[in-house]
Length: 219
Image (tube, rainbow, N blue to C red; front, side, top):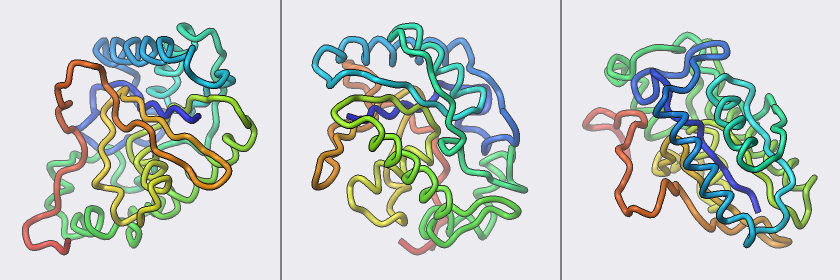
C-alpha cells in the first residue's frame, strides 16, 4: 500500500512555480496541515499492511512535512532525490498570473507530455522519474505499506499512471496541500484506493493549482 502525501502549504503555494534550490519551508498553516495528515495515517495504520518506511523529496517543504509524519508514526524519514519536484528551469519562482499569459501555457495544460520547461526538465521526464522511483520503492517493500512525501505534479503523475491514463490527462488530477492519496500495488495492476483526502468534513479544498489554459486552447 502506497500512501502519497503532498507537502503542506508554503508562502508561495498556489502563487508561484517552485523556486530553484531547496525552496521555502512550511507556514504555520502548512505545519498544521501536515499534523492532520499524520493523524489520518496514524488512525488508518491498524487496517494497513505493516508501515515500513517514509520517503521524502529532499526539498525543505517536503522534509518538514515528512518530519511531522515521522514524529507521529515513529519512523525516521529517508530522503530520495528522485521524488523531487519538476525542475522548471528559467520559469522557477515565476508568478503563475504572469505565466498563464504566455502562449506556451496552453501546452502545459493541454499537452504536458510535449512540454519542457525552458532550461529545465520536461514534464514527461519528471513523470518517468517519479513513476520509476515509486515502482522501485514499492518493489523493495512487498506486503508492506510506505509513505511517499512529494509535490503536486509528481504525485499527479503517479496517480495518473496508476489509473492507466495518458500523461496528457494528468492536469485533471488535483492533490491539495497535505492531502493523502492511496494506491494498492498488486501482482497484476495497481488500484487507486483514495485521492486527495484532506479530512472527513466533506468540504472541497480550494484549488491552488495552475490556472487553466487561455480560451481557445486545444482540449
